[in-house]
Image (cartoon, rainbow, N blue to C red):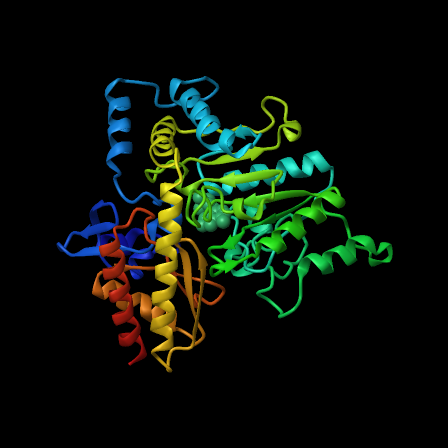
Length: 416
Ligand code: PMP
């Protein structure tokens, strides 16, 4: 601990939020070096939707490693990659009538976003990409250019894109609809509005504080993109892979994004894997135009195929996520209602839930008490005002209830 605090850069000093050293983990439970156990309501910000050390994925990975199979396959096809693509097509795309080309843009989510932005600019021959208040798309310069919270830019200035974020859905400014405003700008020739190449959005903003877009709003934005020759990029890196219930968060809205980015729980095992899904006719990059050494990790392909086969051949996981999510929201609302001193709004979709605490510093204080009581939860939102409730999707009913009991105790401790 002291060692970590002394040497790890302040930028990654998460030891301050969770002051312990974690050693082992299984499912929704984590153990630390002191022998304490914690319930995970964080799931690596959506990177561990199937929990820690899933047995099915672990077995597949161990078998692959034991067989001395290819670990790195730059510029080569590997069995792991071929199997992943075949599984993705069969389990994910075919049942949903989806047609996309798959591009491995690099190891992490931000690489998938960079690829999407770059490709959109090339396809449309225009530079600007519109984005929304509190949007979060990653830490590289292109992704930062469409990240709404400028404090995330780490002093890098305004990279690539001089736009300002547009209000997200109905959440910012009651009664105001960004899609309507945008239409006026695009259709009024005297507005001087510089037509963008694309719009990028999260259907539920994660780092932005669990702000949920309505299906109608998503449909309006899609229609606008079609009518005005702009691409719609949906960043499903945090909201996807079942976090909101369905595999893709936008499924209930019926929209068909031109480009989709996924990562985080795609590998299922906490391994880095990112994917940019591209409408086939937009796949215009020539070989070598978008490269990278660590594109498509073979071990991650193995665990990802195992996860897709195990969890997504039927709708059992989706149904259980929706049912658990409803219970969590009900319980959180009851916690808020029973405490006049707690001014908070509960919102979310599936197991992507937030409690927006209106009192400054309260969400952080609750998070700290959660940790003391044996529950891992993080905060998000522009002022870290939203306590995120994101357990692994496979959490048992018992541990979900226990975790919510701990959260309730933490709320009381923070309010004292
Ligand atoms: N987009 C969204 C919606 C995210 O939540 C994140 C990560 N929190 C990213 C992009 C960036 O992904 P990564 O951290 O893997 O680069």
